[in-house]
Length: 266
Ligand code: KIV
Image 1 (cartoon, rainbow, N blue to C red):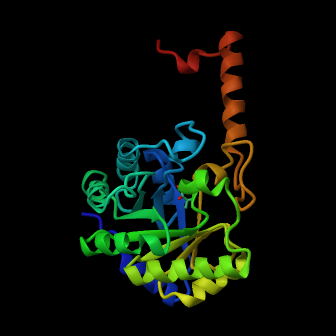
Image 2: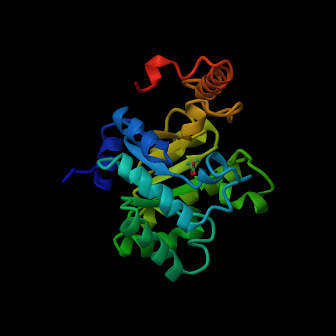
């Protein structure tokens, strides 16, 4: 039996000032690569919808699709700490439905925790999930599941009032029992203030260097798409490498170069 990290380890990491590294993963091979690279947390993000399934945003992805991919991530990285992102409308409708779906993430995909978007208004739900034994990673700041009401993806917390709201949300999810909180797209200074105001770790994405850890979307970091958000750094150009490999394959098949003797059976 592999011994996995527990939520308590992440609080300790914050106390000891050791950065936490999280990345999204959606399938077994990339999960295995992330585990080999020593990444601390694999997030099966609802970004599955735009990054892998070809949807316009995160809203259409279903519980069944998330479970399917989370189970693959678990098979690829059996010893990793895996967080299951609860998809849009899997937890907003009722407490019962939220408990049921979060429970499925742990029981059917063997996830270690769930993540959900929302601040103070999500506190009762977080309390109920944690009370039922389900670790919760909260998510405040920019909330992609609310893109329709927000009218787009905008940096949050830029005015003093908005910054106070982000801070109050982060405090509320901590008080409700979340073991960590994602801070998405807030000014760096606010990321620092929130991180210093909480005991639980903050995991930033576009929220500056002072967060307790960072999360990025796998496809952005490996350069699978032509464009990526400002906060994402491309550590490789995998998209270009894949295109080049496929065009060499096509031209070798068409030119009668592949398969050669080396790749044929006698
Ligand atoms: O789904 C996702 O990729 C996320 C990260 C942006 C934190 O929620």
